[in-house]
Length: 84
Image (tube, rainbow, N blue to C red):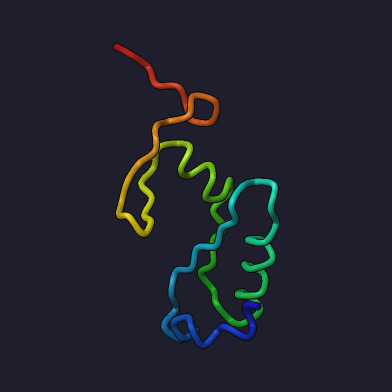
């Protein structure tokens, strides 16, 4: 759908930073989106590896209709913290 929705993005000549992502690492939609945006002339396109799922699981800030929050850090996905 990206080619049909390019008008919703900043113009190419504004040289915006664009970050694309999927829900999780098993999805390749963000890779396809990055390719489509690059072919459309955008130069600064980045893919958030791991997707939204791992962003949230690592305790980074998220925003929803209820506001900004952070989920508890998931020990299985986030780097271990050192004490002392």
